[in-house]
Image 1: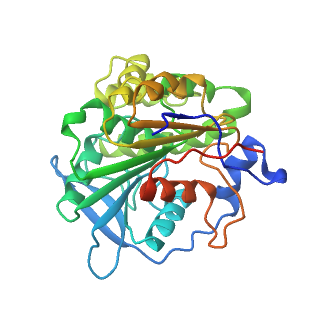
Image 2: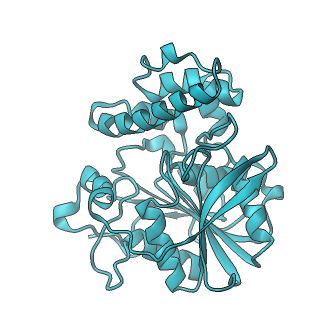
Length: 331
């Protein structure tokens, strides 16, 4: 295995090379195009439930790909559906789970989710392991951070049925990514996230009066302020910086013992150099880092595939089926 792949086969169209074009194109123009999934609820130990979309045949097959979406995404996000569709064509079942409050209705408990919370992923994996012989994980953005944390924070507790994992566009250093998104060229993304997160806080405050200081909500114009006053208190962190330190995957990826591919673009407008764990990948034969020159955030858009798969989906299936082969240089 090659721990660090310095070049990549990804070649975006000339007219779609920019990081923002790559980031925005799938959201604006891609069609989902997948048959309806079975909607299920997976109970959690605290009398709540994880909602999920389950794509399968008449009966579960031998293997399932568990998909984790990004911040304020869902199991119906286009990148999730795109990989689920591609995996189904290759004989995989697909199980895309929603973080609490990201599914089709609000969750019952006060607890929501945070960007490094593996509690519910463990529930989902246990549920899948009771039904399948072989499991693989795929995470996008924050979902990649959650997946990497699951694999690295307690390697001995990882389900033995998890055979491979992959993650795309991962903010491995949450604090660095939070500060990057406060930059002028990324604030359009920040505003969209905060709009959604603030609406959920207001809904929670209606259901659980007195648990939030809503006066702080309008003051939150970046992630650091929001996480300091809302995320950290909800989950028992001392503050935003404590949350970032304890929830980031960067400190634990060196401990991963499942073959794992991490793909992120160097031009990703959400990421900084701290989000590329080069030293950990170089030292860990189980972790392969592929840093593409272009691709934006959860983009990797190209149009050369007759089945309509993006490069990231073809790369994911290559990894799941045959491991990481050295890629040809970019042109």
